[in-house]
Image (tube, rainbow, N blue to C red; front, side, top):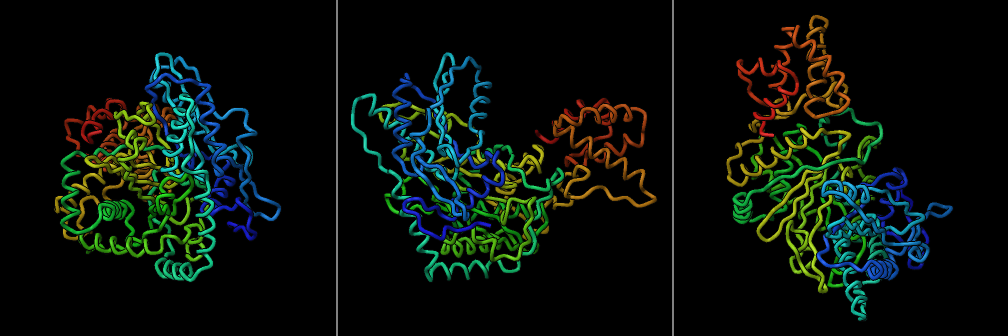
Length: 562
């Protein structure tokens, strides 16, 4: 339970969102899922001493970054300043003789170190200096002090201070943390206001009757305690689909956000089979010019209740989603951390919380040169310094699935993040491909008239689970026990091997040996491969499938378009 600060602390109060993040970090101290990262390739000769001074000035000059977070004897969480002065160094310098891939892996390891919020600053900066260059600047902060916009602002401030120090010029930071402190004060005042009470009543009505967790059929056995670990896969939106999306949105007079979320709901319906479920989406709480330039955790997550009827058309789903988004946005300030208290949903430690799935739409400000640098392959200049994005994956495992879409003037990029303790890479890739196929059909207006007629409903489309997974093991009758055991073994080995799971090697060797002498096993193996990977196999291909799992992988991969 989150214990709200009951006594005001001068300059040290946390928002409820920060308190929730503090609780998560304390429950899982080795978690790095809430590390927020920005990394830049530096196209200029770096003076390390000047950069270290710039970093120290950035951290010490901001009340939130220059803090540690501790709970007192009665459980109140307080922010205490002066962290920068107690740190030996705030800039890690790594002189490296590594190739590009090894360098990227080294950088990833740096971003995945957990923060000890009670004894170190909640931000780290590293300079990677590979032989032959260019240097790479990495800024990692815990989410408790920084949203994604803040990470760009931190990088911008470090570069601005660096340029000023190098030129012997004065620099005044646009934000010293006072904006966030005022935001925290306003949030506490809001919670005591009639507006908050109306919002609470709205969310209570909206979430009334939610008694089941969103059903996402996992590939792997669900851990007893949720683990924040994950990976991501890219979704490539070609130019014609991006152009068509703009036309489809305009024709229906809805937002791009509503359209993309609606397609995501249809995907989740097809994948899990539920018609009433929750997903979440983050909204910014930045307001005014000062808010746009402020570093801090200015984000709230809102739940969206998807109520789908199998007889619905996509346009019906879209209308319901658009209306739900508008209603929710009118009550966007009510802290997400308080919502579980007003829902009759049983707590499950094996799940990430009220919403297991997140949809994110980022639209970087093109006028901000650092934001513009995040477009792949693009160099920009800030304070006379030329930089480009150095992409590093981040924030994996916070949710079971996260679809993150980044829209710029002429391009749309998307990534599907997935929890690797629940889903295999194959399933993630299949979901990404299915989302693109659904999006293309929705844009073209070629989806079926009713959701129930979508090709490949969950029972047909979903890959069979690994035995023992949440989705269920193979059930057998007394008369079909032997066949059930064979199919369970096929599923276990095939799914694990096709997911390139290292622990499957011994099982695969034994399976291949039996495959050559057991004709019934061979036939059922071929049938189950068709079901598992949604491909059609010809009788002439059976000898290739029987030649071993490596060859079977090549055949399936070619047909599935991996």
